[in-house]
Amino acid sequence: MGKLVFFLIIAVLVYWFIKTRTPEETETPDDDKAENATPKSLEEMVRCTHCGVHLPRSESVTSQGEFFCSNEHRLEHLDSSS
Image (cartoon, rainbow, N blue to C red; front, side):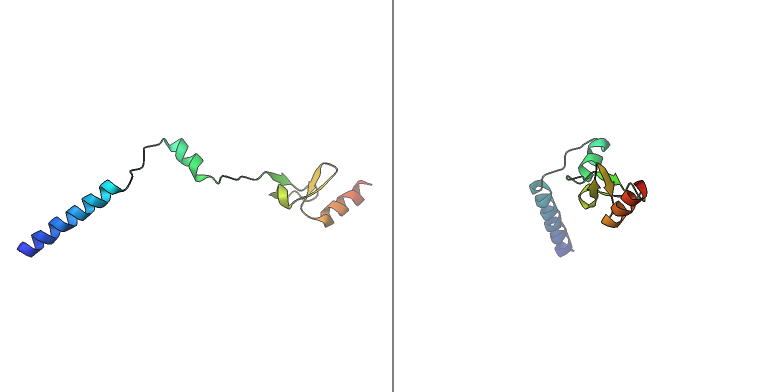
């Protein structure tokens, strides 16, 4: 019985030591948590003028101020506009 109490005291001391050494998280409102969960680099989404699919601006093809999901849709749109 004495060994059990000894190991229980050791476990409590180890837990207390770890708890005091780790920095505690400060309480933040839920709004701040939602902002922190979002990625830091958000990219603007654009809509393909021809088919309407949404894609990141960096992956789009731009022509005359309009965005397209591919060069084929850009060419088809230009052919249908003429």
